Length: 307
Image 1 (cartoon, rainbow, N blue to C red):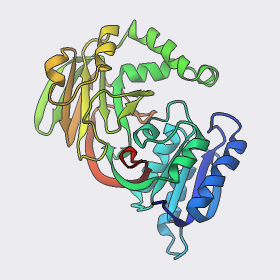
Image 2 (cartoon, rainbow, N blue to C red; image 1 turned 45 degrees about the vertical axis):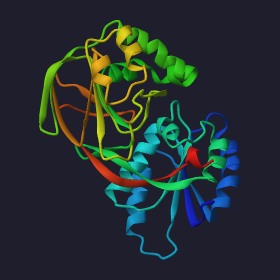
Image 3 (tube, rainbow, N blue to C red; image 1 turned 30 degrees about the horizontal axis):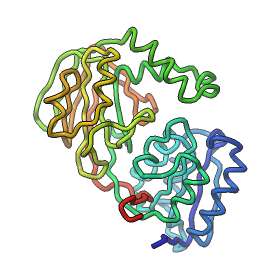
Image 4 (cartoon, one colour; image 1 turned 135 degrees about the vertical axis):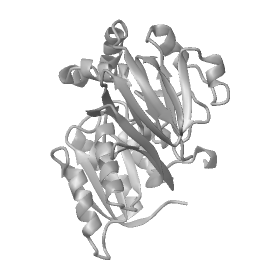
């Protein structure tokens, strides 16, 4: 059954989209207006505007307030919206349209990677609640991580990313793997302690990171658990090992170089301090406290089992 809403708002960024943003806006709004009676389109000119607008929405007691939010943007833009929604306790469904390099969480939502097709997918979507990660009071829908992934992101120059897209990350990975930084880590996960040396720690809620599917068959973004992957000293064989499909019952039995931990709360410290990547945004350094918050956001999701 097709969802229907009274008033919707579509946030977009001028850098979003995979072609002419204004042409894509026209294409997606044609479908979105089938989902809601009224649609407001709002340009996000700079970082922080969407988050600020969420605070305004939370203070609006108007009976005609928005009952659905759409966003056309990349992972960073989506992260800003998620933070605005969660910190203001906005119980408004969100429809995500891909407008970045990887658009990782749209894959988890079973949404197409092209904005026009994604807007068509939303016509057959359902509302579903999803967990978020609370990382030192900042919220992440998809992941947080230290080490190689941060080095990789910092190695990608902004103009190179614009020109080469996903290929820029491939080039950067080759450079970073050749000289990874090694950290001494101390991790407490649900009262169990772990320590050692690592080149990367990934804390995942979503099923995709960096454009690729995390190969954990039973990983779910709405089961009240985060999934932590601790990588040994990095090399290409470990990367290959990570992308072999496993399930949580046998991961640690067949993977010697990447440890998997499922938990609800965690604390992480490193020596030296490590920068933290949170849904593509490098915001602060270790130590960090992380917890999973259940059913914090409502997203439009396509259920492939009901097609």
